[in-house]
Image (cartoon, rainbow, N blue to C red):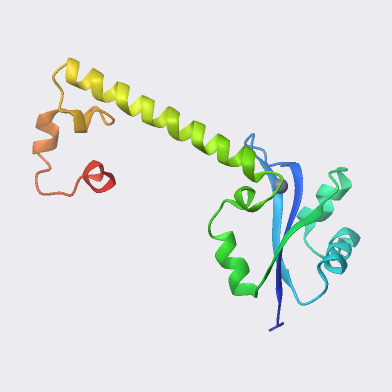
Length: 149
Ligand SMILES: [Zn+2]
């Protein structure tokens, strides 16, 4: 096992299309090398195919952030599934999109609750549209709405 000492984030926004409309704009790795030497290895086609593909598309991959750490730290950051939030270039826009999505979701939930109240449905069933009877038939089972509250 190779000892790694630096975790690094490479940004190549706007990223490589993934086929589902989304794009992959970041790569997170770890190395015991100097990170710029490591980037040169990627660009030479001997590292991540993703970074090489980004360079081939003219996206100019660059190291935008580093942390002292090892492979385990790299996995810890990857498991958060929000590399854009860690990027100094993409982070502010990512956080703004997240806030907008949260506001839209809260507004939709509020509207659903108001609609449910207007038609006499129990408000907690508003998002699923289940009737009181359907809920009673599952009496005793934990409700996702209660846990999320
Ligand atoms: Zn970025």
